Structure formats: C-alpha cells, structure tokens
Amino acid sequence: MNFIRTSWRFLGNASLSLWLIYALFAEFLIGSIIMRHHPSLFHALKDMTLQQWVVLYGANSLRATWWFLGALILLFLLALTTTVCGTDKLIATIGALRGSGLWRGLLKLSPSIIHLGFLLLLLGQLVSHTVGINLHGNILATSGTITVPGSRMKITLKELKVDFFGKGARFLGMDGSPRDCTGVLSIIDAQGHHDRVISINRPVWYKGWSFFIEDFYPKSRGVTRSPFINMVIRKDPGIRLMMGGAILFGLGLIMHLLLVTRFHINRGHSPVNVFITTVPSPVSHKRHHIRQE
Amino acid sequence: MISLRFPIETFYIASLIYGIALLCYLLKLKRLSVLCLVTAFTVNMISEISGRYLIWPYCNMFSEPFFLPLCLAGICLILIILKRDEQALSMVFMIVLFSCMAIFFSEGYYPPFTLMSKSIYAHLFHLFVFIAHGSLIAGAYLAIHSVFKKKRDDIPYQIIIWGFAVLCGAGLFGMVWSYMGRSDVISWNHYYFHSIAIWFYYVGFFHLHLIRGWDQKRKAWILLGGAFLIFWFDYLPQIGGLHIPGVLNARLYELY
Image (cartoon, rainbow over all chains, first blue to last red; front, side, top):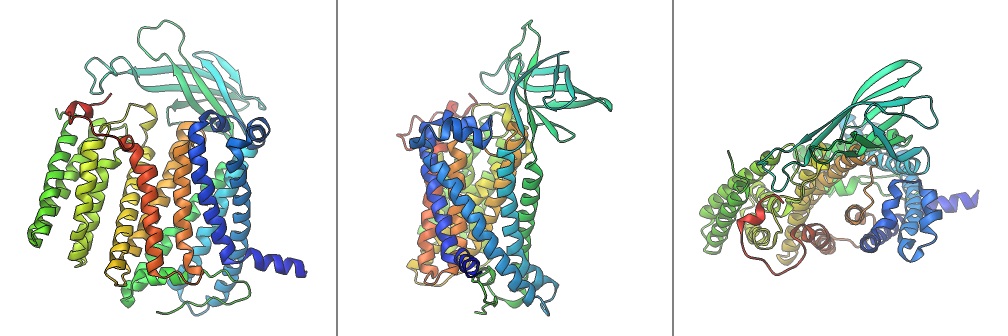
C-alpha cells in the first residue's frame, strides 16, 4: 500500500511531467533530423503495425531508430503521469465545484477535459498502430473483384474516371496530367450490393472497414490498358478513440479559452492570469485553490 | 481572367506599403504609419485570397512566407484597436523583414502540384498553422520587448495562448487530412515529427507555472526559443533554406 502511495505521489509530481514533456520535445526534434537521413526506414510504418516494425526495422537499425523507441517509452510514462495528475485534479475540482456556478465549474473542469482528450488521442494512436488490419498494394482493375481478407465482403471497381488537365492549363507543365480521380466501388456482402463513390481524399467506409485510393492508372491520356486503382484496405479500431479524443481536446480548449476570457472581461482582469492560475497544480493530497492576483 | 502572377504582384505592392509604414514610424509619423499598415494589410489580404482562389480546390501549401506578414499585420491592427500603438508599430520592422525574405528568398509562390492538396482539410490545416506561427512569433517578440522595457505585460501571453490553441486546431485538421488521403493520421516524415516537437515545446511552456521560479522574464526567453524553432524548422524549409537570392524573376512564381 505504501508502495502504491509513494508511486502515485512520484507520478503526480509536476516536475516529472515537465521533464517528460521536454524530453519528448528533444527526442522528436533529434528524431526529425535523423529521419531526414533515413526516410524509408520510418516510411515503412505506414504499411505495418508497430510491433512488426520494431522487429523488422527498429531493433535492427538502432542507430537510426533509438529515438523513436525512446519516445514510445516516454509517451507511455507521460500517459501515466497525465492520468495520475488528471485524477488528482479531478478529485480536487469536484470537491471545489460546490457553490462555483455553472460557468466557473466548467472552467475548472476544462483542463481535465483537455487532458482526457489527450489521453484518448494517445490510446487511439496506440490501438490504431498495433491492432487492426492495414493492407496496402491491393490492385483493383475496372470490373475486377477482390475479396476483403478476413471477411465475406467482395469489392468490385464498377467504374473509374480520371480527369486530365486540358491544353493551356493554368498550371504550368500539367497539360495532359491527371487532375482528379473518381471511382465507384460496389461492395457485395450478405446484405446485397452497395455502391459507394471513392476518390482521392475521399475514402469509403463500410461496416468498420475503410477503403482508400493510394494510387491509380492511367496517369496520362490515350493509354489503352485497363484502368485500375491501388487501394488501401483498413480496419482501424483506434480511429473512433482518436476522433473522441480530438473532439474532447478541442472542446476543452475552446471552453477554457472562452470562459477565461469571459471571466476576465467581466472582472477587468487579464485573461492570462486566470489561465495560468487555474491550470491544475498536480500535487497529490492538496486541495486546489485558484490564486487571486 | 486573373493571371497567376496577380497574387505575387499584389504581394510586392503590399510589401512596398509595409516599407512605407516602417519609414513613417521611424519618422514618428504614427497616424500615417497606421494608415499605411491598414492599406498594406488589405492588399496582402487580396494577394492571399486571390492566391487561394486561383488554384482552388487545390491548396497553396507552402505559402507561409507570404502569409506571415499578413498575420503579423493583423496582430498589429488588433493591438492598435486595444490602444497599444507603440507595441504594435514596433512590430512593423518584423513585417518588413519577413516580406523581404519572402520576396528575395522564396523558391516560388505555388508549390509543385499534388492531388493530395485537393481537400478542405488541407486548406484549414495550412491556414491554422500559418496563423498559429504568426501568433507565436508575435507573442515571443512582444514578450522580449516587454522584458527589455522592464514592464510586466500580459498581452504577449494572451497572444501565445491563442496561438497555441490555433496550433492545436491545425494539428487536428492535419490529422483528418492525413487520414482521408493516406489512411493514417500520422505522416511518417520529418516534417510531422519536428511539428510535434514544437507542439511539445509549447505544452511544456504552459506547464511551467507549476514549477517555482518561472516568472514572466524567464518565460519570455522560452518563447523566444519557440519562435526560433518555428523559424528554423517550419519557415526556412518553405523558402528553400538559407541561400543567396536568385534573380527576382516573376516567372519563378508560376506553377511548375
């Protein structure tokens, strides 16, 4: 029990959080410089799970990947400290909510919402890159069919339309080059046929699966080979967590900014002082007080 | 039909007027300086809007060098409305400096064409990033300015808070754009990771108050460090790094 209490206090220490944040800053900064010299090593992460990448690339190229592995550990520790600090703060805030009024209560809760959003984003990223299906290199020609692995779904590319820039296009050197690519996917499953439009930056979602155009053919006019797309097939359980995290984070941030401004316009104080004094002091076993300047 | 050179030529005019605003400030003609600033801001805005309109729905992804003076001028005008004329006009030299860098060092107004840029999220991401960078640089400048004036001032920190909030918004839009185009919220390249590093830098800044001894004076230097990071890692690559300027040729600003 003492060990748990001591660990909780240690993880709830503000200095530790700050050290972790700046250590992550240093790791990512150094890592971005290393990445410039080894782009393909990290580009492989788009095609495979984190654990596959660690085994195939990470562990075998430690000179270039040490920072990334270190950053993963630091992110895990930061998630722990954020959880501990956030819990302490939430307990203190709930206790102080009585008699606060709705707006002041929301202001006190907004940092907790921001931190919760951050944790969900991290969790979503972890789930997305460790679990689920991520298949690249699925070539689908028009009227061709592929079966979605691990399911009874079949996908047919009913049609593919590639628009090209005409002569005298506004964009120099782009005459005859593609300017858009749109297709119609026909998804066949036990429920029947379902047609969906797919395009660049416009994926198709269907029953937890998502389909993206990674590349397409033809890239110029006048070719006679059958058009096709290079499709990415994903089943990503982490995406909903990330969306939830992003929404919470954004809401918490907007709430905090607007309410801080509201309180301080009404009182004639600078919003900054309240922002700074209401960000939680993550010290265990101490009640949170808003310091008045 | 508007020529593709219209945005860059209007940017030249805006830069000239920014220069006149600076001259008026140095000659202590404050009202004229403010008038020139308002005019230059309007012309710069026309340049920016036309630049986006001309290649809509595609996105002008690396136009930060041309947007930054606009953002800084906008912040100056907000400070003038808040009756902080001296602080606002002291920033004009920075606007002129960035305008000159865009004119003489930029590799071109329009980036190489990519279908990936055809997304509303690409537009939102880039706009939010440019506004965030402008706010964070302006906030850092004003914070250091107040340190040297030996005055306690909260305005720079308000600008930094809003700048960081906009930066977070940029991150969220960037994630959506990346997911829609690449099936992954993370772009596995160095641009993404140095942006994350800068984000963590500011996250750390906002938690400094939890540690004793971090007064406004010390925090101002942290902000200066953040502005330097943005300049070195985000701004410089968009002008092709530090290099001797080429011939000022409008043809450079046509799409390639």
